[in-house]
Length: 174
Ligand code: RP5
Image (cartoon, rainbow, N blue to C red; front, top):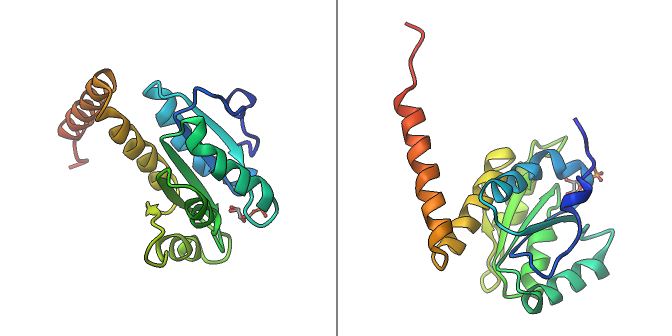
């Protein structure tokens, strides 16, 4: 298990459509599941640490550059007082998809409440705590992009069909 982001995933790129950001490298074990989905679907993306409280100037710069750089979505994961997604959303109109990371003491319920309880006017689409939330945030970004990308839409339909087939093939230990 590694808390280090893979170097090939870290650089910001003019071609990135989705940004995956997180408050700490300790979030990587959760957020890597978003990156895996984006990689699986061939969506150009980047991943990096942008800590809201330890790198506030970087957070503002990332958010301000998101739209001119062409990002279509930002997947933001954080734990505890998880203000990263909300502060990003406050500084950009690019859709922000928030992933609550499980925290040590409150198991991510704190992260979930921090992200989901955005006051009216600045939305953050909030997903489940942990791995499922990270993967689903990426799948949601894929489905948004697929509305204007027929090849990506076909991949998404195939993904769903395979998932259905796998569920139908499930057996019980009776
Ligand atoms: C948050 O604090 C991060 O998103 C992380 O989930 C949590 C703990 O960070 P580290 O102390 O592991 O760097 O900012």
